[in-house]
Image 1: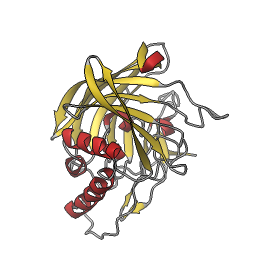
Image 2 (image 1 turned 90 degrees about the vertical axis):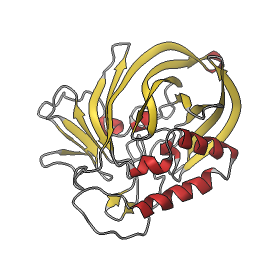
Image 3 (image 1 turned 135 degrees about the horizontal axis):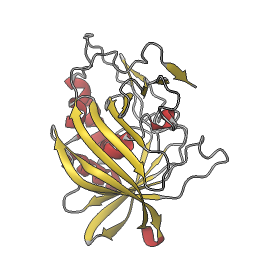
Length: 299
């Protein structure tokens, strides 16, 4: 999974996108000045400009049209950005006994900064500022996993198709497929070589031909800290379960992940993911995503 960590500044905002140690640079800074306020606020003109550029780019290819139509079906890219930062609980539960990852998190959908709070210990937190990963916890074992990698990873589950609106993203229309007796357009997502620190990551999205909504995401993890000699984990097959509509945005109700097996079918069920407590927040202080006093900055 990518953790887009390299990004240019968007006036007072750091603009990044990734699920990896060095987030992917998929959006460019907008040269617009705005009056500072005490809360995070994205001017409507910024949203309109960014959405217009994404629409033009995506509609220039058949694969892009599928993704744009999916954005529209899920509530619209303009609504996604205008709603403000998203808050949710993401409870990732491997079924093989490996480490669970359960946190409440807030993500700035505009610049992809994040703050996670442990679901079991409210004083244990970690996040990504747009430039630095940090962690603050009394107990060093509070997060028994790579928090730098995980800071934005959940966004690459809950944020599709909107996370594909920036630069550095390449789309390829593949052969359509049938899954559970429904017809799907299939789009493969890859990344420019200099985008983030795991450019070999890819996603394969199934978009329903009738509703234009996402149903399946196949993907690989090639995070270098996990695969120091190159390569990647076997492909996974994630099914979007149900749906929930929050402030005009349609998102999955949860996820079930399998290993991908022969003929691109789901094999063993390996991870249950609960996606709950979803809301958008428009009144966060502009320093909300800064590393708190006493936090450890991660290299």
